[in-house]
Amino acid sequence: MLTLYAVPISLYCAKLRIVLRHKQLNFDEVLPPGGYGSDEYKKLVPAGSLPALIHDGLQISDSEAIGEYLNEAFPDPNMLSGTIAERAKLRELSRFHDTRLEPAVRALFPHISASKRDDQFVDHQWQLLIDRLDHIEVLLPQNERPLSLADCGLPITAIWITFLSEQFGRLNPIEGLLATYLKHLNEHTAVADEVKSYQASLNAWKKKL
Image (cartoon, rainbow, N blue to C red; front, side, top):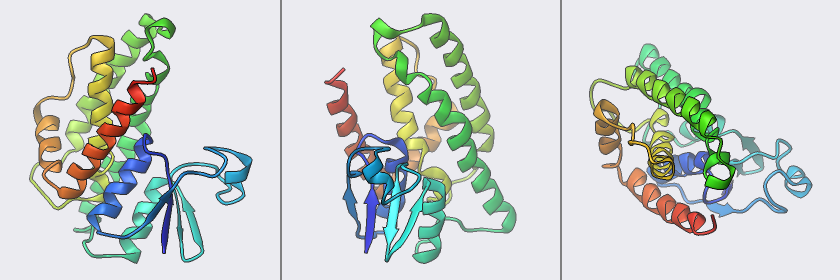
């Protein structure tokens, strides 16, 4: 039995749902009891973070750790394949997304509302985001390959970048090689299904702004 603690709008939860969908694994998705970071939830998941997975009594938090665990526990299809060098490059791409690109996007969240926006900060952070996108293009594969763990965060991050572009009145910086790469990713059923579901969750969230 796989139980996933998650919330619909979380980027990292969506990233993990793509892995689960691609491996065609049955799982129960539940909200964290008491809410994200609550004492009640920490009794189940000490880190209090999302997503978290319970599998036959084993509790794991952190989307990267969960993804690699699922890939070993359920190896078909293999989402971390290739030579030792190719697997290292996949991990490099995945870590760059999680530690450089996604945080650059997340830093803009408090400024979505015009009433709380610091335009000077947004200008600076937007340029940093563009720099991160330029860097990640260098890490993208030159040829099409099977869907990997490294690919699962980018489609959802791209949704947020598009949304933030609209909110801040900026040109969408997703273009060129990255746009082509994302188009190929969306040809995978698991990615397309999660993107559709996530976009609906984001649209519902936007109505509350």
